[in-house]
Image 1 (tube, rainbow, N blue to C red):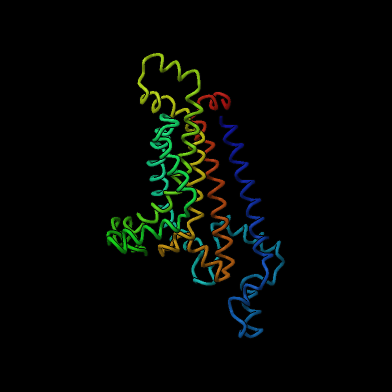
Image 2 (tube, one colour):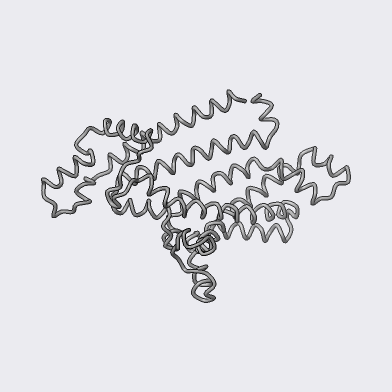
Length: 316
């Protein structure tokens, strides 16, 4: 078990190093001079040269990468040229919006998808299965930002129950902050719950054909208890995999929804850094997203060991 975990951690670190190398060199090969873009066409040659030296653009790309890597190892992600603040603090500040938003969205998608997936598997081929399938197809087909716009029109413009956008900050209180995240979380959870419903249904149907399920039913245990206590726990591996993928997608893929609701999260920061050509912020945010995906995959692998005793036995 310890050897397996150590091997996975080593793989994680090597992958992170390779990803950081790729990110830095791709960013460095982008056309255009970041300093010239930031200063504009009216900047003098001396001012442009001074900013290029300050940004380290006068040094070889490999040397800049090694310096950047050493700074990251010290916890220093650099200074944003647009905002004039440390990038690490900027990311942490935006994460206080994106992380709760992603957690609420994942929680909502689980609460919606698991019951629907179980019901669709139990009544396979029936009306309930058809309605669950209709919900799943609709959620997959409809973009999250369009759902967000519909929610704003209904609950904000028409009914006036929820704010149309913006974020008051956690210092304004937990209730106002959570209220501002409800509609964007629902918009994100709609499509995620649709995909998770399909995955849960397929996994449930596969497990329902196993011999142990027939044995459980032969003992006289009710269908509901059979599904929830015996079938669902054995169908969780693909479900947990999808939940892990959804969480990383929600952290890294909230650009459109955060812009629709004017939320100061990581997605909006990435979009602003791209439009303002803030290379330091772009590199750090992309690296953070990649590190999050790699770490989440590692945690999903560890969750497999907790869910499936057969994997624990092989790893022992």
